[in-house]
Image: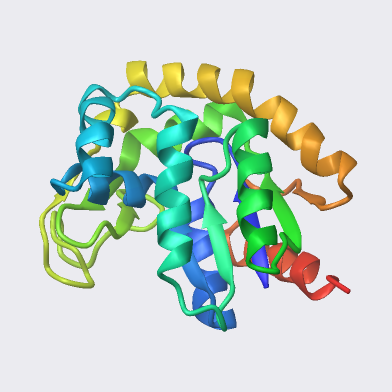
Length: 217
């Protein structure tokens, strides 16, 4: 099964995608993690990505599409994927569709988690990430057992530059401008399911996501 989880920064895509992937035996491809990993490498694609990641700027479609295709090409074809944070534009969606088609695959369902701007800003202000393994936490909603340390690997936790309020609000504006056409694109394709209770408890949101996945024919 191939799933896409859409939502604004801070909507909970990563948390839910990770849980879906684990329960269903799927590969979790998170575009943010993929970009940061590439930026730390000296590969040709990594060298192209690095300046954008360092500035917190949008990575051009052709570069991120190349990264996704490279990732797909190295996967066990017997496993499906949960795409988290990709695609972000109609052009990326079309490129993903073409790449999967060449493999004899297709997107089965697109899950759109809706959360208000006020809640998104609150979440970003308290979000922490592990420097070592990229696991995420929240100082109020999902605190680590030991302050400042990752539960999974013991790595140091930090606030990503993109989560600081001024930059985060800029990311929201860009998201709104670029993603609305993508939502319409998947809606017209009959693949989109809106998860309207995105501000509920994590378990309740997950239940609605799973209901949408189980409904795939």
